[in-house]
Image (cartoon, rainbow, N blue to C red; front, side, top):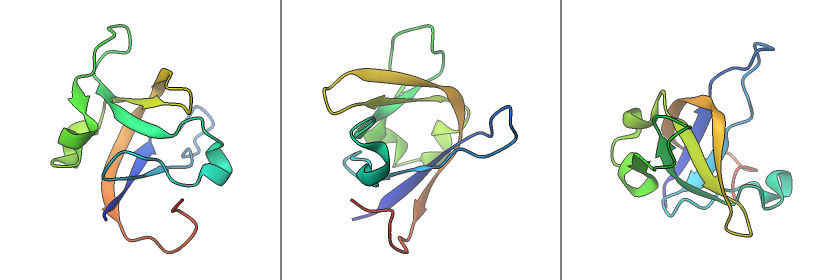
Amino acid sequence: MTTYAIQKAEGADLKLPYPYFADESGMIGRQDKWKGNPTQVIGFQSDPNIMEIDLLWQDAILDPDRASGMYLVTADSEGTFTTHLTLVESVKAVTLSGGEGR
């Protein structure tokens, strides 16, 4: 199964946030770090003020470059959706070196 690194853009502190590692189903690894918030990638939005998913995860992994410059939408362990207000810098298929998986 392929794993994808979702890297959000650097913050005001000029540091890159820790990336999310999600599998093809959208399940996010490293739950030792995230503790259920978030657990799954739903997709991406162009405008966080419009409650609409513009790019579903299943479509994003077919063409990961489409997610760049969009806002990540995830679900937590309770099923609540969240739009992350930092733009996505990149989505890339990665080879796990350990620790990124579940």
